[in-house]
Length: 334
Ligand code: SF4
Ligand code: SF4
Image 1 (cartoon, helix red, strand yellow):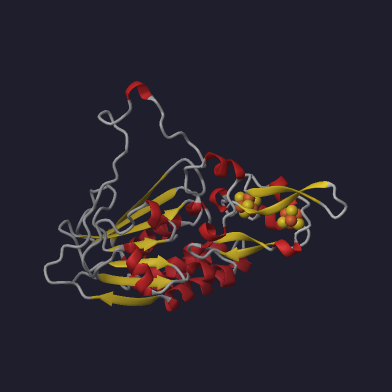
Image 2 (cartoon, rainbow, N blue to C red):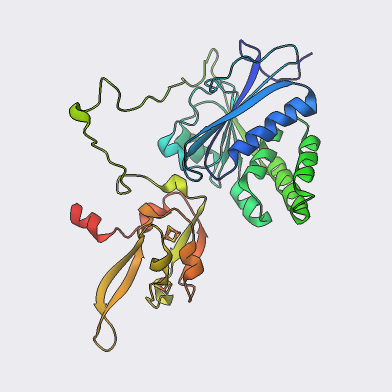
């Protein structure tokens, strides 16, 4: 008898992980597949799709399982997943993360928000939502988001054996980094135990979410004549919020001594200055704030600030837009 809870017409149980580079979705996909193949004797495969950048660009990881007597000959991206795991909330803005989700599918989201808010943003009418604060767990345990997400994914894929995963974690860290074994085991267990579920009734006969294959905006039919580049690689137009891994610098102007140490280390010219005069009436530049539009959350500025006028904060949805101090050249352009 099959241990897989659901299968598509080819006999596959399919999982798609939606993430950004740097959060470890690729490795999480590998470990999930390994747990099914080596731990349970299932057939399985996994691969990821990502761009050339190491951090910040969208990443997808695909995992397929089948019973031992069903061969997996498909190596295509997963379009009708039974489970989707979303590692970073900012992805909603640019990627249709639930595209093609099975009607009875489960979406796991790394978030601190509540079910109804997340459901609304995902435009999810039915199916099951699973929420876990994977980043919060990782910060508290000083580990990585992917281990907490793996814990939650093991709870969702309850045919997999969490003990096998604990053994993999031990094996991975015990030789080189023995001090990381316990925190990673705790992270995995917390992801497993702290994930919360809510199901929304599925209307009879529902097919699930339609899968929309992302097409390039410009093709041979639509590109401007003469090969003109109308949208150059320009950070004024680009939304960098998905590059941040959950943290932002918070500016406390009452503590600032306007020394510009932050500006010196910032790789993206995020700091906005205004001309003024000091107490003796001499001209001086004063820091007015941060243009979060360009901030990739590296937190170099927090380390550089000598007076704690910049501190690390957990990013909340909407904070960057609300507290952004636009660069002067943007105002001039508008
Ligand atoms: S976090 Fe990094 S990118 Fe953002 S303002 Fe600080 S130094 Fe600049
Ligand atoms: S490093 Fe700190 S004190 Fe200096 S300008 Fe930046 S925020 Fe202000």
